[in-house]
Image (tube, rainbow, N blue to C red; front, top):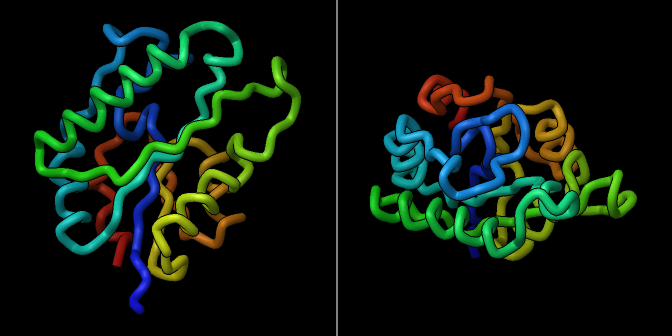
Length: 163
């Protein structure tokens, strides 16, 4: 049986506007519309799309899992309305200063490994796009090709790096 190829995406600074710290409420959660077209293209090229994100603000008490759920629902609904299906959102709600070290928080690769197993991903044909070095470390640990972008940079500018 043929395995899936996938593009995993960090959230803040990749799919929604980077605020420099945590996005703590729904009013500040601004989806980067310039990524609709390139993500639709990746989907049309057969790539499964999934989100891998650290959300340590939950551990810090800066926002609740309920608020985070509303942000993620908006993200999924907005992309779906633009013809883009995001298969799932994996998030780590821990923060080392509050919960100690965990295995899921990037630069750890556990979230990626779980998603890759769940969706039967061919690691040799898959990528991780992020705007932080910890995204690249996590992707490399999971065997993925990492693509580092600047925060809020259009994904269309790096499409040529994806086969």
